[in-house]
Image 1 (tube, rainbow, N blue to C red):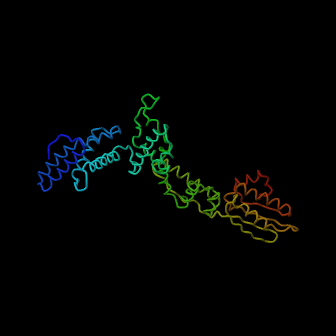
Image 2 (cartoon, rainbow, N blue to C red):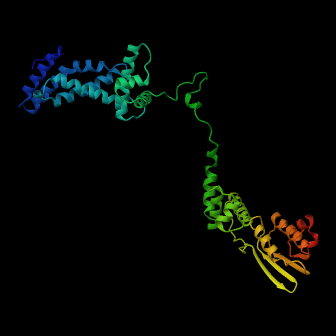
Image 3 (tube, helix red, strand yellow):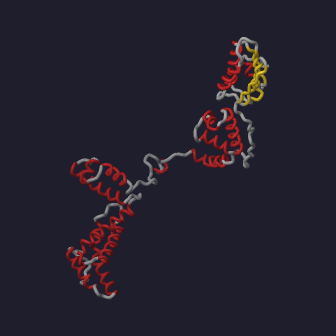
Length: 371
């Protein structure tokens, strides 16, 4: 094969490739390597010319030429003269290698290969249509030219922005010595609460199951105390007491190195129970449990039913010594009871009220009921 520094027309390169294939057929390894080196050197200008087509796309000319040379070597190694022209095969191989280089190394953000190719097609169509229409083409016009959906055009344009993304280290306009990255984002006050959140979660695990469930229903389920009471089968006031005690323990545990011991709360049954006994003209009612707005209606109905009918002298004795809590709704029941007893000419005596409840009853004008 003649030693030439460069090849002009493609026909000459095809002839040289044919001569190389014939000469290397049946030659020993040393001779094949020498012939291969000579032919690659002969075709280097051809690879250089192909690499120049892709200049100005963000990659250096030297890098593109190196990639083109790699494609040339692959073309020489895989060339089969029986399948046609070497130059045609080399053009496809070299340009494919250059495009692969752009896909793998030139994109600032990784984008799927399909979107990379589609972005290039959309870009080429946009340039062509801009020249034809003398204006910027619409997404619909580009989609019609490329033969895709308009949504795919918009997606390709968005993906194209990932080719050369802007740097956060660029100086911000209008700010002296400030980079763009310094203007993005804001302080997150929640970061300072991370340690506290982790600590609270660990402390909650130390609570009994009922208290854990109660706190979960309140702060994660966003249920009211009335809804929690209905869920757990407790009174609203009992739920309030349990929650206050659990939160107080958590606050104390958060402020100490060693969490305090959890002591069980008085588990007296706080459900309302009404026991009525009659002896002669005296009706005795004993109430056990808390009286709050959840059960005040029930207590009122039961006491109205326990009142004896009119026409004879009678007395109702209401024992509230086993009532640890009496709220405003309970005071309302006593007011209703007094009025109903007055209509029926029945004497009512209330005993055993807690001191705070007795003061509220007196302030409500129920002094005549207190025994």
